[in-house]
Image 1 (cartoon, rainbow, N blue to C red):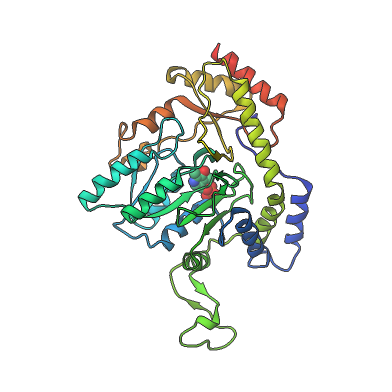
Image 2: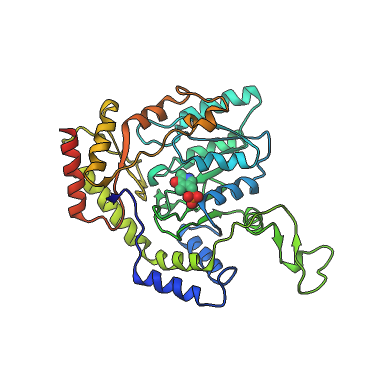
Amino acid sequence: MIPYGRQTIVQADIDAVVAALTSPFLTQGPLVPRFEEACAAVLGAPHAVASNSGTSGLHIACMALGLKPGDLFWTVPNTFVATANAALYCGAEVDFVDIDEETFLMDIKKLENKLHVARRAGRLPHIVAPVHFSGQTCDMAAIGALANEFGFKVIEDACHAFGASDGGVPVGACAHSDIAVFSFHPVKIITTAEGGLCTTRDPELARRMRLLVSHGISREAETFDPPADGPWDYRQVMLGYNYRLTEMQAALGLAQLPRLDAFLTRRRAIADRYDALLKGLPVRVPARREGALSAWHLYIVRVEAARRRAVFEHMRAAGFGVQVLYIPVHTQPFYRAKGFKTGDFPVAEDYYARSFTLPIHPTLSDDEQESVVAALAEALA
Ligand SMILES: *Cc1c(COP(=O)(O)O)cnc(C)c1O
C-alpha cells in the first residue's frame, strides 16, 4: 500500500537518534533547546517552545492565552478533532466557522458575520483558531484585522504547514497571530515521531508555555520571591503538565530540518505534476491562494459525492492509501452530544462528502504517482 503520507528516514536520522540515546541525557538535555532555536530560525519567530505533540502544543497555547471555563473558542469543522479538543481541556466552549468552498480554509466573510452576531449577543470568542489545512495558509492579514477589531486572540493551527509561507512570510512568524502550533507526527512535513512546537513573538506567552510543558515549574532562581533557598530550589508557579519532548525526538527533528527545503520542493513538484496529470479527469484539483506557498501536506481532490465511495474503494483495492480528511468535527458523536448536528456547517459537510487526498510525500516516485493517476482514471471510467 502506498500511503497518503509517510516519513522520510535516512541514515543521518538514525545516527542522530542513536547518538542522543547513548548521550548522558535522554530528556531535558541540550538538544531540545537546540531544536527549538533551529525551528525558530527557520520559521522566522523569536520564540519557539517544543512539546510532545501538536495536541499538547494546542493545549498549552490555549492555556497561555488564558482560555478558561465559559470562554468561547472558534475553529473550523474541517480539522482534526485535536484542534477543538484543546479548548475543551480548558473548560471552554467550542463553536465553528464554516470553510470556503474553494480553499477549504476558514471563510473570512462567515467569520466576520458571525463576529457581528456574537458582539450583539455579548458572546465574542476569546480565541479564534484558523487551520492551515493541507499546508495552505489562511488569509492571516484579514483574520488579524478582525482580531484587532473584535478583540480576540489568534492561534494558528499550523500542524500541516511547517515551511508554508504567505507573501514570502513563513507560517510561524506570527505576523498576524499570537501563537502558531506545529505537529511533527510522521505524516507531517518533518517528524520527531510524536512532537509539537509553538511559536510566538510574545516573550510572556513563550515563558508561560515553557512553564506549562514542565509542571509549571520554574528554575530561574533570579525570579524567585522570596529568594532561592539554595541552588536546588525550584518553584511551581502554575499548574502545568509533563508535555516534554525527549532528546531522541529532538535529535531526529534536528536531523530532519536541513532536508526541509528538499522535502518541500519535492511535495510542490508532486502537487504541480498532479495538477497536470489530472487534467481531463472528472475531478476538481485543489485551488491555490494567490501569493501563498503551500507546504502540500495533503493533495485533496473532489469527485461527485455519489461516486466518492466507489472511487475510494477502487483506489484502496489498487494499493493506494487514499484518505478522507476530515470528517467534520461537529458531526462526531462527542460533539453531536453538545448540540451540533448535520446541516450546521454545510460547506464543510459538502467538502467531506466529495473529497479525499491522493498520496503525497517526498519519497513518492514519479512512477508511483503515474500509477496513482492511472488507477484514478480507471476508477472514474
Ligand atoms: C496532526 C494534527 C494535529 C495534532 O497533532 P499531533 O502531533 O498528532 O498531536 C492537530 N491539528 C491538525 C490540523 C493536525 O493535522
